Image 1 (cartoon, rainbow, N blue to C red):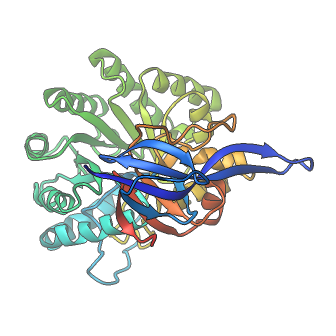
Image 2 (cartoon, protein in one colour):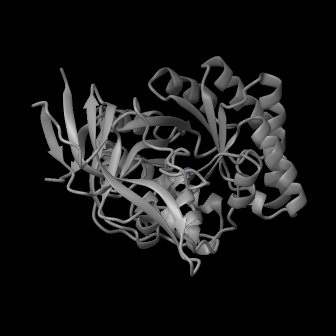
Image 3 (cartoon, rainbow, N blue to C red):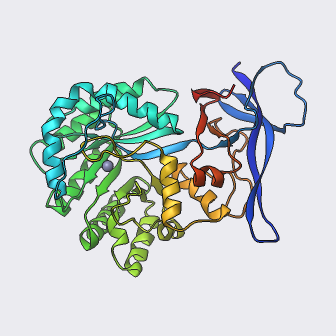
Length: 406
Ligand SMILES: [Zn+2]
C-alpha cells in the first residue's frame, strides 16, 4: 500500500486585516496522510500520529498548488547549445524567415534541448506544460518527435498539452496534411497562427483549423498576435465558429494583444462572448506589447492562464522558465499591492486554484485532492509571488519530483 505522512506542512487558513489596515494571511501546520497519490486525512500538527507508515517531514515549509506553464515552445530553445543572441527584425515575417533557415540545423537536437527546458520549468514549480510544436514545410514532424521523446522521460512528473502548431502558416504548401499527420502522431491539440497576418485569409484559416479539430476531436489554441480591430475581428469570427460547431470549452487564444487595443466597451462585449463559450486567454505578460486586459477578462469570468513562451531561442535571448515570475510581473504592472489581490493572482498559474478564496476562506487543499505541491519557505502565497521566493521542492502524487525537503 503506497501510504505516507507529510509532517508539518504549512497551509494558509484564513485572512485578516489589522487595526492599521494591513492585511495578512494566517497559516497553520498540519500533517497530511497520502494514499495512492491523494490526500486522505489532514490533522493539526499538534496531534500525535500512532501508525508506523513512512513519514516525510516538510519542516514547516508552505505548500502551494503546483504551477501550470500554459504557453511554451519546447522545440525552439537553444538550451544546451551555448549562448547565441538574436538577429533584429522589422516584422514577424522576417523573424519567420530567419527561423526557417535554422530549423533543419536544430532539429537533430530537439529532444535534448526540450529536456533541458522541461527540467528548468519543473525546477521552478511547473508540473503541467502546454507546448506548441512547429509543424512546418521545413522540418515536417521532426520537432514533434523530439518533444514527444523528451516528455516521455518525464511521465509521472509532468503532464502536457502538445499542440501541432503551423508556425509558418497553415494555408500553404502541404501544411494541412502535415497537421493531420501530427494529430495522428502524438499531438494532442490543434494550433493556429494569425489567420490575417500570416495566412492572409481569415475565414479559410479559421475554418481549416476547426475542420482539423473536429476531425480529431481535439481542443484548439490559437496564437493571435494580429493587432487592434483585425485581431478583434479574427477572435470574434472564431467565436462564431465555436458556437456553430458547439466547441465551447475547447479552445484558447494565446497573446490576444488586440483585446487590449480596442475600446473598453468592445473588449467587454468580446469578453462576454469568450466567457459564454468558455474560451481561455493565454498571456506571456510581455513587457513590449499591449497586454490583454486580464483584470477585465477575469471580472467577466474568462479563464486566463500565463506562460513563459519560448526563450533562449531565435525569437528572444531573455527569460528563465519561471511562470511564478510572470505572476509577479503581472501584479507589478497592474498595480496589485495588497495581500489579497497578490494572493488571488496565483490562480493564473495554477489553473484557477488558490489556497484561500476571494473571501479569505480556506479553499485548498481538500481531502481527495492529488498530493501535488510546490514547497517554499514563505509566509503566504502573496509573499511568494511578490518576492519570487525560491522553490525548495516540487511534489506530484505524493512523490518529490524536484528538489529536497530533508
Ligand atoms: Zn507562442
